[in-house]
Length: 264
Image 1: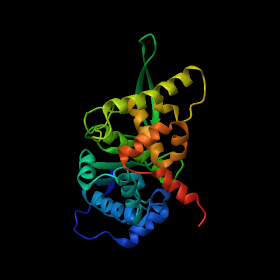
Image 2: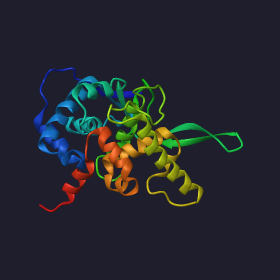
Image 3: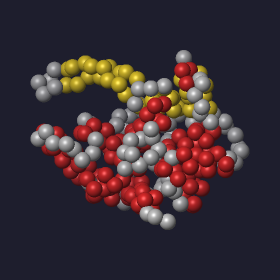
Image 4: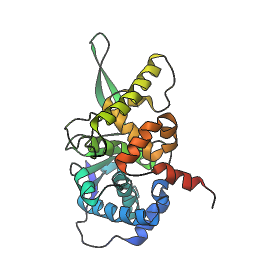
């Protein structure tokens, strides 16, 4: 049973007090310059007014005020902050609802081993989505997102939505801007994929989450998640990929992090 949902469909302007409160709550929003913060706030408010945010019934007594909703919407729209308004709106046409569950949820998964045998097992997920389905998030993991920690379940799942902008499946090959050729994208991501799988074959620790080596779509989503939430690690591990994503998103999150760490 789902308890409550938020959707306003109102022409009211962005509530400035709540947006400032949202920015103060998470580093990913607090480190934006004034112009970016204003543009992101307007997009986040539009997002809230046009997407359904649903809380599970078990979260009925959980505080989730307007500032918290803007924290969610702000992080969602952070992915497309560097894109034009038309590109931003187009990117999220397949996002209709964000469904928030109390905690991680179980799904039956299948895995094919090297002999072709299919193994079924249960796995606990922090988030999942599909082409036209809702973005499903664990509230516990959502509350851990928002900092430069390397973990952001919302950005990860919305990266899958971007990936499905030209396909019903996640394949790690989203719609690309004209200045990035498919061959360059394939070459850079293939290099990362090959490095990860080679390290795993040798029993080595990978420089980023080895979940990125589980599927090309997960490689893309994990790297997008790191791009925003731990750009230092991504740039240190795979600088060519970091630069490619800077061009793809038209953003420089490493500069935001560096500015945050610099003394004033």
